[in-house]
Length: 238
Image (cartoon, rainbow, N blue to C red; front, side):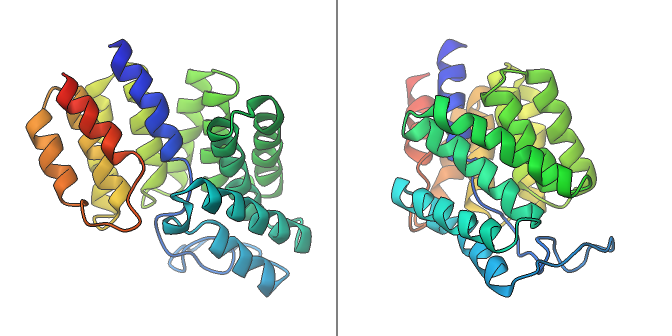
């Protein structure tokens, strides 16, 4: 169990960033019916799209550049809630990877609160605050509530389910972890990170061969997911 918890902490950090689906000009997908304010600046939206591109966030350099882009986005439009939510997640990532939690975790919390203050129905905002509660505040119940709220607001989005998967692994609830991982993959079957989370959940359920087979499906993804070798190592160590 301790090894599973340690690996889960590392892996959830690797899964924090990016959007897994195309979004519209207000940060939501075009098929959503609730009207939302579009960003005031086309340039701010372009920076948001670039700053939340998953493939560009698979390196420390890419994450730093994404923070720069999202800071520019909110400088151009300080009321653009999705950009604040994306910035929150990236502050958490850099707080871990650059070992600057004291500096960056409070900024993550402020950004998540700003996103929800601007849009109280923003699924991405609840997901961001859930991650802040998990990693900054160590509030597992609050994190689970916010991630569940995010899913309730946008059940088609895969990433909050992936993060909830990681939370269930951290709290040693493997059956629930696999359930959420499979739902995430159902939402976005072409998402490399969704396949990786299914593999991770299979590992903690003792299904090691299935986990390795799942990872084979994303072996050729470039740039590679940082968590893949960690999941392989975890499976082979058990």
